[in-house]
Image (cartoon, rainbow, N blue to C red; front, side, top):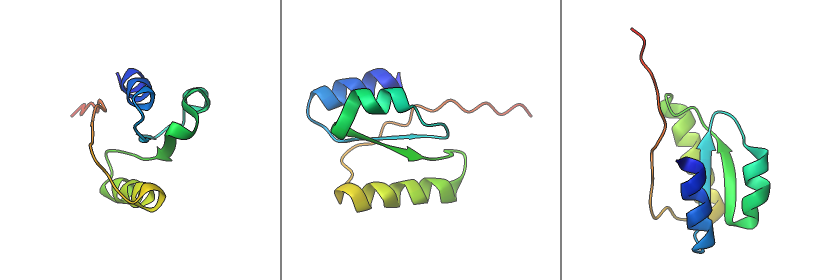
Length: 75
């Protein structure tokens, strides 16, 4: 879902910040300058804060957020 959304938004001219714990270099190359990868553990507040700071430093704004990570709590 995140890949498809990233591709669609870049095609529409958006700047896309892709946040994940593992980089996807193939997708990053495909999307080029329209997207940037930020390493982020979405289950960790400090990691999220660092990612948001990186997005702000790169583009100076955040227009929309799509949180589509799946986290399983096995307790």
